[in-house]
Image (cartoon, chains in turn blue, green):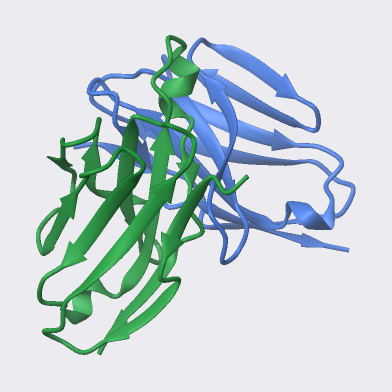
Amino acid sequence: GQNIDQPTEMTATEGAIVQINCTYQTSGFNGLFWYQQHAGEAPTFLSYNVLDGLEEKGRFSSFLSRSKGYSYLLLKELQMKDSASYLCAVMDSNYQLIWGAGTKLIIKP
Amino acid sequence: NAGVTQTPKFRVLKTGQSMTLLCAQDMNHEYMYWYRQDPGMGLRLIHYSVGEGTTAKGEVPDGYNVSRLKKQNFLLGLESAAPSQTSVYFCASKNVGLALENAGELFFGEGSRLTVL
């Protein structure tokens, strides 16, 4: 079966760095996506990886290792507004997105 | 600047009642999706459409029907609601582009919270 695992909840301090991990087992791979979802709101697209390595977008970076079935989202200089759930999703061989349950990130002052 | 709009945003139903959720997008996107989101679970695909007049089943289609009569609208129907259908429903759309990145970049509506008693 297809499976995406990420931690349920993480806590970090304002101004610090946090890494949210995602491991996956899917039938085929056509890219890994990270979305941000604030409580009670819609998910919004953050990043995309299809090749191994690090993609940087401002304070956010996303890393992929296809051989290990592993990705992480790195958030630097944390701000209170970064408190949200972060969803990992993999596009399978049918070009359908398979979603993880999300990691709720709590930022403390 | 509307993007994807869902109506209604909240609804309470009794078991056995029927209802329709409406999704409208103004971005001229070909693909549209209906997901449900439950605590502790990832988004699960109910039905999707790759263009006007087409629909297809997703991962959890039972108990739901859909229609895409117009390109901009995607309707989700519950014929006989059950408590197991209590959930937050998200509609999403995407463009059909050449870049693979576009294939995974979905634009979501704000969600419709449905409670079935």
